[in-house]
Image 1 (cartoon, rainbow, N blue to C red):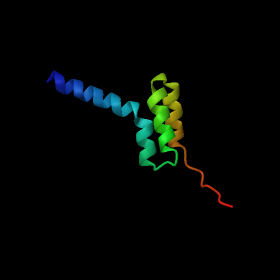
Image 2: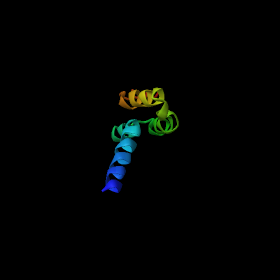
Image 3: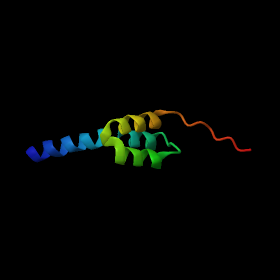
Amino acid sequence: MDALVLFLFFGVVFVIYFLPSIIALARRKRDRTPIFLLNLFLGGTMVGWVVALVWASKTDVPMVVR
């Protein structure tokens, strides 16, 4: 029972920590890799996590080809 609770706890923490990366993948963002790297290395600072979350939530601007 304790192992199950511990497993669920760390699973929820993992999902919350990587929520910006999950959102970027689900939205098929162009900048998935930089968002993931920012989330991975600076997500623990909360500032990095919020920046990654905002970046993942923003709409991609279409690229103009001339």
